Amino acid sequence: MSFENSPSLNDYRLGLPERPPDLSARRRQWLIIGILTLLVISVWLINVFSKSTVFQTVTGTGNIAGRVVGPDGTPLQAEVFVPGTNLKTQTDNDGKFAIQNVPAGGRSIIVARGVSGYEFPLRIQAGVSLDLGDLRIVSTPGPGD
Image (tube, rainbow, N blue to C red; front, side, top):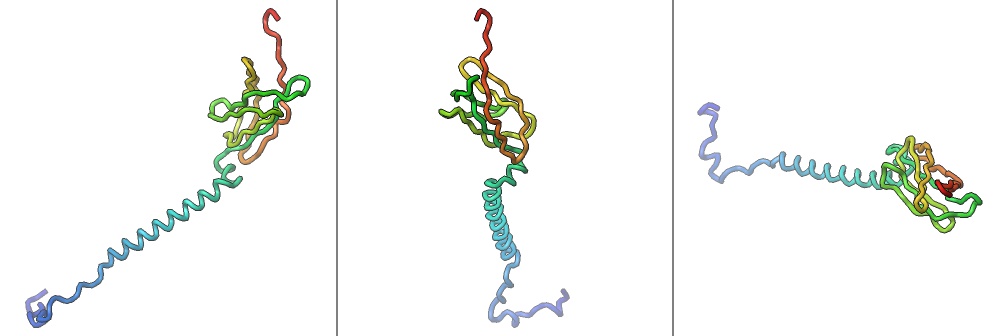
């Protein structure tokens, strides 16, 4: 700016003019409000979809249920688990069991009763509940029996 165009002291006899509003502070404020709004909406959507079967399909899990019975069809107490996961359960008094959120794909379940374990291969489809029906446990004689 040239000297001729410079402000004079008369221009400032009443003091310095007010500063224009800081637009960067206002932008920052709206940015924070926008981020917080998106965060709240994201948490809400995760909460809603995690309870739906759509979420199970996207994440690739299914459910299994069945009943463990002896050779004559009587219900048996046993532990049922999915190898390679932390998923396990006990059968109830009727021999029934259910395991949720089993990873999709080729899997097997192990039915453990006493010192014996019985493997049942199966295929889990994402978002599907698979009813295995009655799983018959037949004891085989060991050596010397």
